[in-house]
Length: 401
Image (spheres, rainbow, N blue to C red):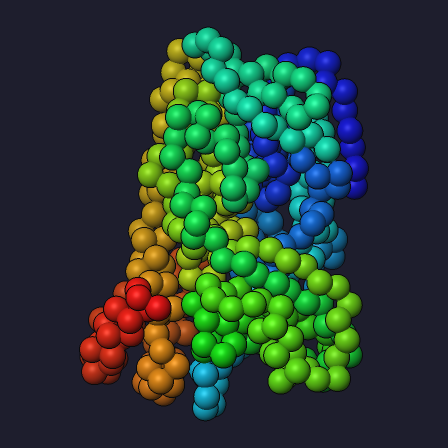
């Protein structure tokens, strides 16, 4: 989908980025009857796609959505976790818990909904500058196209955005971005309805690798890592598990693991999604969290436009609301990531068998989007206490390696 509008007039709210967070923000703001301009830097919404495409069904419901043939590919019942050596463990449920989506089509579906709600979409339009011109006005500069005015800018332009700094805010730590690579494989052995996750220094040091069934004989395989060459590591994984498959497409990307920013608003400006670090540090996933925060941002921006004397109050409320929803879980995910991804292969091989007796309890409380409860449960479990000295030693060593 490609739609280019002429920049002839100003908007009430401008949204930078037509990904999930940006589209959800634009849709929510448009419901309040304000004029929205949605600006996407690429020629086509959803392209390039860097996402693994796993979203929980409960997360979709949180966004007010359900499975849709416009973007869904396969239902998933759980996950299989592979230690460096030894047998994997499984966390499954009788009914589907997640959906594999085509991320390009998902973003385009949201963009079409935004347009149907009156949002004006501009592609090939990269916002490069934010300026506060008065108490009630802002200006944004569109690369090679000029300046557009508005009341509020919502930055949902993704990792690496420079707009928050221009608004006087501190962005996420962009040094905490891991390089990633993903293959679309065809001609694999028959696939079941589980996502596979692979751990260890020989597979994906500092993070993990994954394989996601997209069809009966097709897989989306990828990894991110803090060390090593992503292509070499992924080629080794493919050779090990799908030696007869063919690579149908290759997608590079990155995984942000820094955690959220301390403040998400300033007068005339709020940011959401990857741009604000609203991402699960344990997996790099941000569809649900980013989308929901985008909804809150869109509502706050529209309210600020309609109530100019209380504009700052509404923008600040957005910052409080999204933290009330996600902050506790994100903090615990940050702790979990720092502990788990610094472990040696030897410790991981001891950890997986120790987890096996707890799988029933883990399954009862596991939630893809709100992982704080299961992380707390694991850290408090006495059966894992014997591994604490090893975990501590591994994490200290990882700081110097």
